[in-house]
Image 1 (cartoon, rainbow, N blue to C red):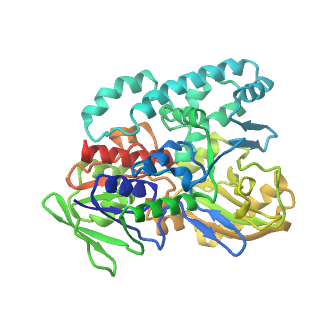
Image 2 (cartoon, rainbow, N blue to C red; image 1 turned 60 degrees about the vertical axis):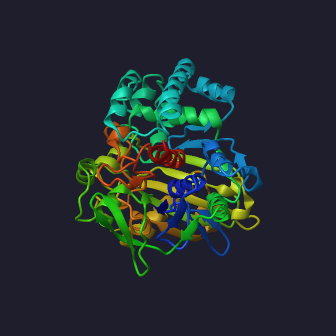
Image 3 (cartoon, rainbow, N blue to C red; image 1 turned 30 degrees about the horizontal axis):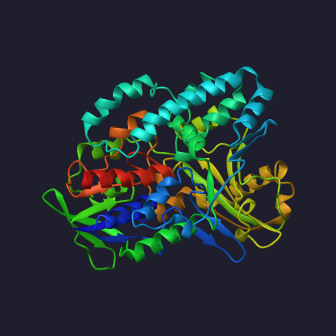
Length: 487
């Protein structure tokens, strides 16, 4: 069969590889001039910057893609374990290292609140139970049938999936700073910890099981090697191919119209574009399924992202590979971002320093950084083009006053991305960073189905469909589609 994969994020790449391994004629088309989706890399005169995901948390999913063709990932890529995984810095003076050494973790917790040591152990045990079902059992299983949701609903209720992640963590830990440390994970997949289902507590167990890694050369190196794998195995890759619309016949996609390029007639379409974009733009006024109509109108979307990329002419050796810089407010700030949709005066920062692990990202004696700040998506009326550089200066000033002294004097080659850029480059509704939000009523069967309910040859992979955002999520979505197509 002729399979066309639209979009070359990790979900699209994994789908192309898996379908080619099944013997299909596979064409991967991408709007941008290079593959990778959000896993782009910006190459400046002196610095490299990964633009999207920065860590590997389920390395086996990448190993599998090479093993499908009897190749070894180690012949092409080096995944280097990180320690610490994340360093937390709070403006109230609290600091915490989230590390692979369990005893070191417990020792830190003990120094903060002795009672929370036992609470953490119980929390981790419960998170592992959620992981066993929510990830190992269900992450790569199709959920496009309501019967599947009904079958697993008792497990979700037993695991208290109706709780938020913050409620889950707070039932085990009493120290407020520790509650924030161990409830922050949903933000890494676009969710508000006060609204995201406690099923997402499995992220903590996933990190504990396999660790956290950085790919030497960055995510762009991973994309390059997966691209080379596709080319070696006969996948056709077409960049600068922007889909304008689908032509349909009965309940099938019969033709894909490409802007200023010849159209493509598929047997099967696998869309790695955002499902709402597919239904809004590609199908436009044509029929769409009842569930997709509902999500198109009522879906709650993840937050937007404001990202600063910059170098420094000096090294900041005390800054870890990953730092979570926590501002003065937690619940209130998240409420401003997700619910009120206002740009607050304060903020929190996800700071990435790849030169802590891979010095090729900057010249000798220099560092490369990106600072990611959760902000409201474009459902808010924020004039980003007018304010983006002033907002960037506020973030630089905050870092300079705290963990990066004199940053304003040594900063080099700063540029930014706003939610407007996410909308333009990745065609994400409202410029959101992670498609629709991972709340319980937008998870599993309630999320966009991996197999379209109306068009029999249209499938979805990526952040907007089951199992959700994040690198493990989108890679697993390709496994789900493979299971649906091939049983």
